[in-house]
Image 1 (cartoon, rainbow, N blue to C red):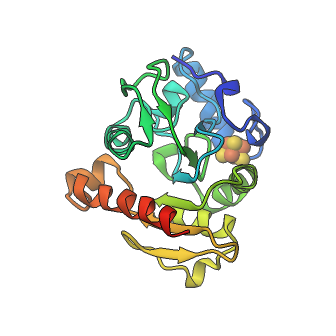
Image 2 (cartoon, rainbow, N blue to C red):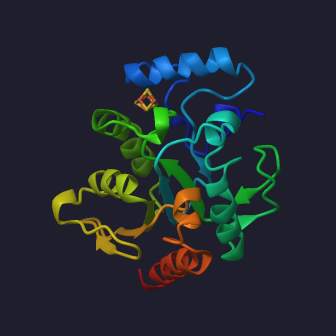
Length: 222
Ligand code: SF4
């Protein structure tokens, strides 16, 4: 069920499987390895197109999702809406079957995470977000064709803002909020496509699709 790390489109920007930098997350990773030895249980690599114009930044792997399968958003509720939307906008080809071996390919898009390891209760601590930004920065530095960054949720928004050299204090977060980085790349923010946000109707498919519609429009403008 695991995605080999060398399937990452940007292997030079990936964390090692046993990245030691966040002690709390390392301890949780070790617990998960004991509890679920067949799961991925490691930093989750990027997934998608090395030539991507669009980078999507999520929060962190979900326990039953990317932490289990090794591919971002694969196997959890949030992935259903994300991959359906990418397929709808021609940013993915194939069929999403919640399995890293489903053959799905992203076209012009890549998925990254603000934090690459599973955090307890889905809540990374500020210093973990700051530490893992090393990999987000490295990923965005390698992905030189990226013109638009879609951040899913406020934590991803702040991490992406910092990675794009935008001051988080004056970089507005909101569904559909746009901020232009000094190098011209656009940070476009969205509510996270989590089960909670969908069940509470904070986010529905039409709202989520509107962000990707705007991303496609921004690509044409830039
Ligand atoms: S969250 Fe990032 S920096 Fe921290 S241990 Fe995992 S890969 Fe390393």
